Length: 171
Image (tube, rainbow, N blue to C red; front, side, top):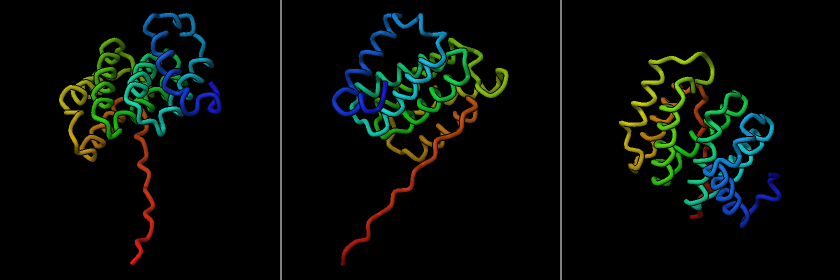
């Protein structure tokens, strides 16, 4: 799980492996192991930072989605934050899959709200945002605004947008 092991060519296969094991319910015994789940979530988030492999990112969505329904807020919060980052990527297929997974998790877990007891109005607002927003559109600014509203509903901080330093143009 260390970043040095998970660099480059191993990232995709490792994400596929975790995704497959989770889909087969092989890691169900780890569901109560907070430390292991937290390391998995942190590793997945680290591996997706500069990843552009769509299949690896879709596996990351499913892994983070699985962790987002954990009973422990220490695991749930970073998993949801990771999903919010993936929801703002410039890859439409990843955004659509992330929105679908989040919607399904909201339907499965009525108490997904992180910071306070579940609020039906916030949960309804979140599901409405996930259903009514066209997550495959090209306008990232509008998508990120919708994502930030979703963050408020789920009780997580919206991702900060990094400013890109532009190199001076030669004349």
